[in-house]
Image (tube, rainbow, N blue to C red; front, side):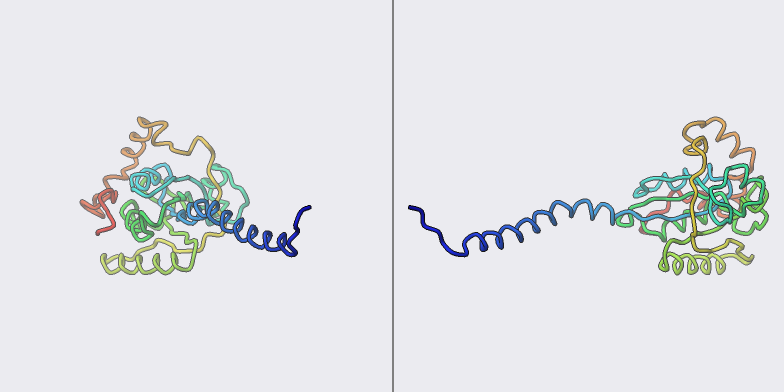
Amino acid sequence: MGIRIRGAGRQHRKTVVPLLAVLLAVALAPAAAAEGSEARATFAGGCFWCMEKPFDELEGVISTVSGYAGGHLEDPSYQDVTAGGSGHAEVVQVTYDPEMVSYETLLEVFWRNVDPFDAGGQFCDRGNSYRTGIFYHSAEQARLARRSKREMSRRFSRGIVTEIDTLEMFYPAEDYHQNYYKRNPVRYRFYRTSCGRDRRLEEVWGDEAGGYEITESR
């Protein structure tokens, strides 16, 4: 003859449910932390081929994607953008770990890879699609971008024409544009040199051109 203790099953369920909740929370914690450790930043600096490499050089940058932002046409093509009718700029979107590299450091690298005085394009690439710009993803990024622009304005006697605007939509560019400097290193170097990009960056930034030596300690 068995002995049944009234309420024992209910008590067992009360014990198991909180235990399952704890185990579930522990299991999900790494995934949540990983997701929270990624952030994005979007910059327009003329030809997007040339804007991937400076950010890829930074420890803490997870990936860079060339694309289009700042226009009114939905899902534009490269031809749409370069023709000038879509309103978009060529941009690079940077995915990074903010625990390893700060948004302020990304801004410093951005500035040192553009001519911030040129309102007609960048280097040999002319037209509105090659304008410079910072497209912020949050109010904090907007605040830091505007502060950074003020600092650049104090550094130079000329006006900074780089735009600062909210990112409404980002469209990745066609696959053949992605990682162009890696896939086509000879053509990339020829284009960069013939376009006068490095020469002009050195004129504006001196030894700081490219921003490759910038670290969190600076």
